[in-house]
Amino acid sequence: MLSDRAGPDETTNPGGIVHPADGIAARLAARPSVSLQAAGEVEAGVLVLLFPDGDGGLATLLTRRTESVRDHKGQICFPGGVRDAGDADLVAAALRETAEEIGVGVGSLCLVGRLDDYRTMTGYLVRPFVAYAGAAPPVSPSPVEIAEVIVLPLRRLLAPGVHELRRIEVEGAVFETHVFAMGEHVVWGATAAMLRDLLARLRLLP
Image (cartoon, rainbow, N blue to C red):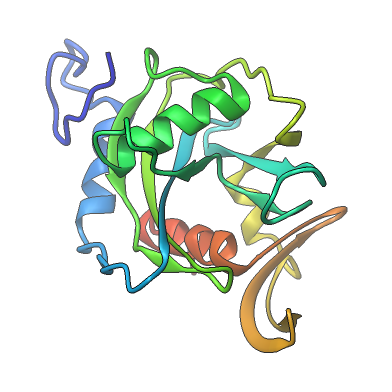
């Protein structure tokens, strides 16, 4: 069962050490998240899944979409998608889509908060939810939707030269966006903005 706690509970160690999820939840909650109302956009939820990177830090999962999906072909993004009629809310949509896209279920996840809402250039209003897992979850990507699952240690985003502001043209419109360039993987647009929001809330930015 997915936990939605935001403070120490039975997962606190006997020695009084707070579970890592509680520390993450406290940092996320320190700054209120921006909530936007849909103005004709399609509402969607995505999941920012955090887990230990094996080197004392945190990592997350990103996906590279296939060229056969309807929108955002070939782009790198968080798992998630549009709310269906059967979804109770946007977090349910994010969790269902994550399970469908990369095979990660809710059993080992702890919901720890959310980030700011974002409007995309393609007509979506996206709400990012943050969850924590004690270890990197096994994945089973859908070959129809997902070309690659990327394990991204957050420390890589802080390396010199990885982040920049860049002007990008999409369907004839030119706009400035955050960009994270990591070799063959380039993250931009709403996903890059979400990563910046996450780094700031976790107090990883200088």
